[in-house]
Length: 379
Length: 119
Image (cartoon, rainbow over all chains, first blue to last red; front, top):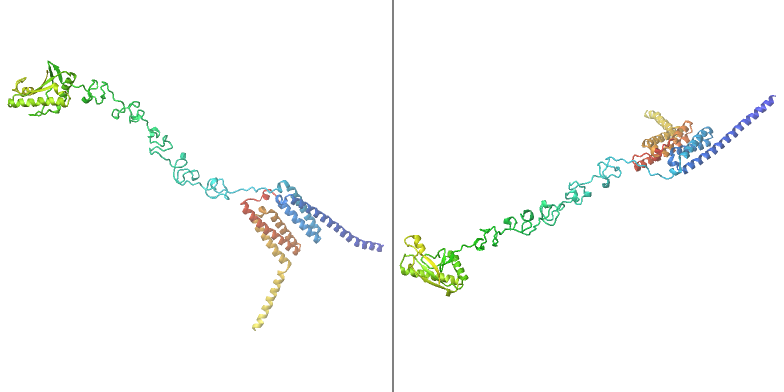
């Protein structure tokens, strides 16, 4: 009985360790198989982009798979199992997170850029990251060199101030009339601002522009404000210089009719004025030329008329001398009519009668003045 | 007299040197030294943001460091040293990647981190 027991004990001492060894070996094989599966899963996860989408899970799976390997080498199956569990779990998670459609295509990183000056341009592309500026100027503030409120970028003349309407360029005044070209309707012609830089017309061409012309449609002198001067009496002498605007007259007499100084009456051409001579001499004074001209006109209108020109004196002086002087004066009048008025000499005779035929008394000055005379007698 | 005084001193110095030499090549001391260096490297990398910018490398470094400590606890110093070295390598790599990626993307979180991947 005792021998049987000891035999069983001996067998047990041999079989149990052997069973344990076999069991352990089997367990090691299982873990190795598990590790292989884990490595396959890790590889698939990697292939699906787990490195990108599940880096922590992948790293955990890989590191613990390595730990499994190490523990198996050391024969510590308990710790190996713990690592297998963790590696397997992480490998599966990595595989689950790794979606090849998203993880294999590298996404453009969503870049959140810092914009310190808040001008809409992030600092990495902002040339002036601390100063707000325009995007098209690399984030730097735009310059306005000429200070005309138009930035240099948009200013056609960045160094000269000018209005926006002229693209920042200074306005020109081509015709120099003080009206800038941008508002000058006639930039090439001088004209006042009131007429938008255009010259005023002179419709009637009288030298006065229409606004200053009292009669813009009718030519007229400046003195009459551009209006034509009337000639009411039609004597060709304009009213402004016509001393007698309502009576036709002679231009030489300022438009007034000449006074008739002669009358043909009683076989005599009676003169209303005296022919004036230089004192004591036979020289006719010019103020008597008109009188003699009228006498000549009578003679011209009566071609057949023959006239005797008589010279008379007052009673002062010697009779012979007076006769001689009166003759000389009569001759002077005849000569005047012949030479100046072109009267035929044959129609005229001259006779000096001296003091012999006074027409009034010689006692007074006025009487003597009346007696000193020339008379034209029709023959 | 002087010679007599010097002999004990020399003996003491020699003893100290022998002890130091032994300790230098002693497994626990070496592995602790490697683990401390690895721990320092991992800490630096994580402070730099490696969990965000290099999560793969950073996770590896942390796991290896953890395993090195574990092996140290099991008195498996050789393996502990090996894992500590691996942890340090990954930590250095994570730090480099972190700095490079920070330079490229500014102060951006790494796309992987934004995805919510957790160990």
